[in-house]
Length: 329
Image (cartoon, rainbow, N blue to C red):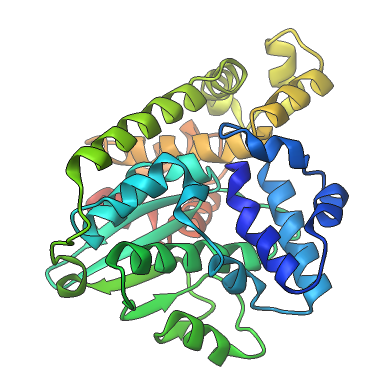
């Protein structure tokens, strides 16, 4: 994930009387790296940060509190383009387009109907000992950016979060100003279309376009980084024979397992991040192909049983593979 994405968490810790630098040191974040706009940290490190913050503050809603400290500059070009959007809806489209700039751990996209626009965060990665404050932070960030874009208060009509119900659910409804459903199959923020389509006086197409170009250039550079790209290519080659291990891919690339792990960490990712993201992207691609069955897709992705694939796909997207194949939008 983008390293500067954790800066609001640092401010939130400081406001609670806790030195964020000590926390960063404990979870393995180099504060000097935060000055680099292209620096990334692994999702495991980001998860450890939020887990430690929840523990130190004894605040189960720390993720929401951290999101409330977010400023657009944290998201670099994406944040500035988002603010310069013609409408709140256009800002949400930018978030979906450039979501991987922020994190490859979730796949944000818009699901639309006549009256509502749903921002859906499909979970891509399985992180051991996952801290749900990170998911709260992502939801809170999107809501806050929409309010900053509009320049005044705006609230979604409903939110569903893929997390256990907290001890004080009313805190979520107060902070997000809407009804919140917990223990959902997928995280989804629902906006009334009429609330997000009005032209904004702050809209600046030229400024938005400049920042779009900068964001796209960075994203293209990140996605084409040599080690990550080579790992993804090897994963794709080997998936039909079952999910490859990191050791096997390291051998394919003629490097040691430790060297591969270090290189991926330097690029802000990990082998498991890449494996799970590759499986999800290929699953979407295969299921959109005419005549491709769910069973065939499962085996192409290295699943030993179609039922195992179906459970994984529903966990990632909130939808069954057959449902997605028949209606991929």
